[in-house]
Length: 161
Image 1 (cartoon, rainbow, N blue to C red):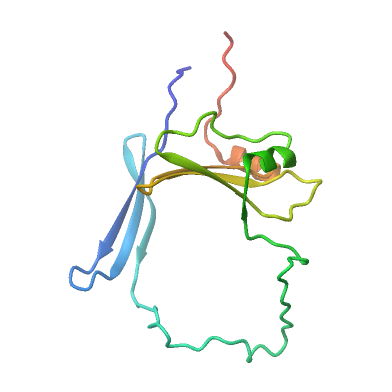
Image 2: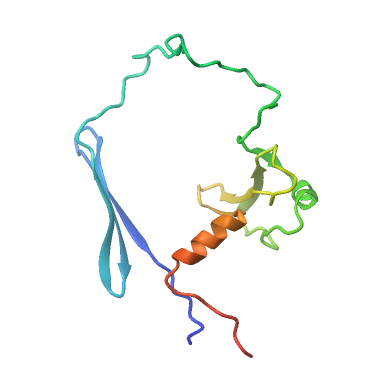
């Protein structure tokens, strides 16, 4: 068994009108075993983007729905907030971050503020550069991990050194 890690690379092609610069569609492909595989193809037939101010948005026509203003997040909250490394350590038994922040990057950790104490703490560690490059480390719920492992077509095992 080779120690080399194989990574899948894809190509996203986006098509624009050369006069108006409107997007006309896109195509996503990946290469596997030397062959190009079409992942998705999208053609925009109708531009449904409304001009600014064209629609007045209100909720008067929603007769059956009770709208609750919840500024104190009593009923839950999925909108993430920025937390410190110390807060992350205090909320979980294990978390993954890079030992050192790469040169030119900064670290921002976000998490939903109200997470159940009896479930794994979910967070996103975003490493961003001033030039717009970024990568993230994201916690996964154990059931998601099991699903992802079922979907992979190859598995690795520890080396017997």
